[in-house]
Image (cartoon, rainbow, N blue to C red):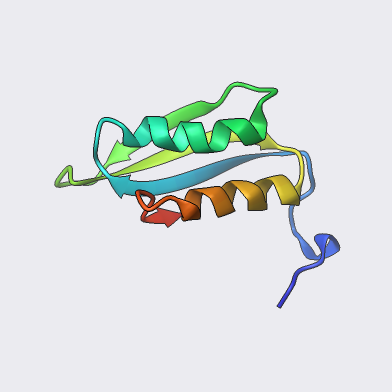
Length: 89
């Protein structure tokens, strides 16, 4: 099923959070930023991270203003292409 842009409940531009989860390594937060940054070059990213209770995993959340559905889909495609990103929401 393909959604038409008019089917989206989002109105662009809009502020969004993208969340990526992976193993809690020193490089993971930087990796997620490096994947997202090329898609939002005209703005700074607000990044927060939360470790799992046992500390094995980390969730990195990036807040930015999305300009289009295509931009958002490109970000998710690139995040999911990384073997180090276990989940992207």
